Amino acid sequence: MKKDSVYTLGIETSCDDTAASILLNNKVLSSVISSQDIHKLYGGVVPELASREHQKLITPVINEAIIRSGIDKKQINSVAFTRGPGLLGSLLVGTSFAKSLSIGLDVPLIEINHMQAHILSIFIDSDQKPPNFPFLALTVSGGHTQFVIVKDYFEMEEIGKTLDDAVGEAFDKSGKIIGLDYPSGPIIDKLSKKGDPNAFEFTKPKVEGLNFSFSGLKTGFMNFIKKESLVNKDFIKNRLNDICASIQSTIIDILIEKIVSAVEITQIKDIVICGGVSANSMLREKTISLGRDNKWKVYFPEIHYSTDNAAMIAVAGYLKYKESITSDLSCSANARYKI
Ligand code: KG4
Ligand code: ZN
Image (tube, rainbow, N blue to C red; front, side, top):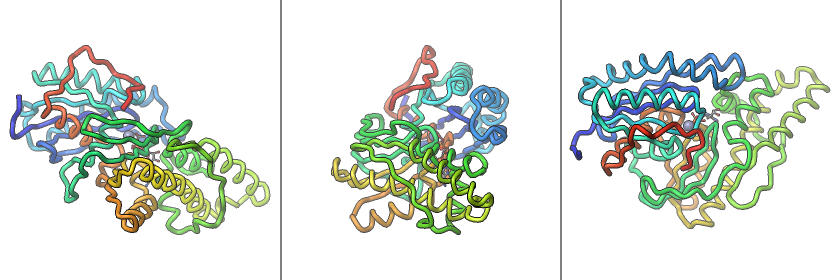
């Protein structure tokens, strides 16, 4: 089964992005992502609409990924797909499609854990040298916030997680409160650049160990905005950049404090920060400068592989294929698939 040139098709449908990618070993030949704009109308992902959109988009997206890669579909050596965690209806679309393709092309089917794939995206071919094992990973996305010790490609141990909202939700829900579009994370990041991070102060949650909590912060933020808007109805409009910079800086400070604790507790100084929120510019700047001061090595996946994409699914598939780890047709989508 082992070959020098392995072509992997990766399929990602865990949430609201329909994505497909072709890799030659760990090098990306194509990566196509179709984001479902329909959810913007509702200020968040509507699960039923997401699965219907995946159903519509999956064939053209996979087709486009194959065309852009320049290979023939007969050259594909394996089909890797997101088994979970995610929205069940969305996962079912990708899972069923991957199964039929693996039968049609007569190649192995490889199930991938979405959160492992976010971490393994650091092994996609790039100018950056990948970390050595063991390393610490912080996955920060719209659905998850977790600390993981990565002992090997597929040997991972969770050592901390959010007890309620994910950090991406903290960004998105705060954005919704001040009338920003979904997903608000990137918009808050952009507006913050023109604002003062010390303009307003928000109470940070006190959570033991390496766990997180963001729901109290969201409630505090909502109450603050309501109170200030009663005094001045144009408060949000007049102070939008300062509001964004202040909430962003509070959220990022929470992450930074926990990263410092995680290094202290584990004594591991190689840190991978991945998932959608790792695209945040303040998080990048602060951790890179902390890394410089403390002699940590901080790694970020390339920005276009930080948010949901299928290249990370394909690279995880390639790594499994090399170790002859494949799945059979009985494997089913798992919305709560553990890392
Ligand atoms: O990993 P991802 O694309 O999807 C999930 O698996 O959830 O993460 C999406 C999350 C959203 O909450 C989005 O607001 C957030 O990542 N995000 C950001 C930035 N870019 C994406 N949050 C803060 N700053 C950003 N630049
Ligand atoms: Zn994700």
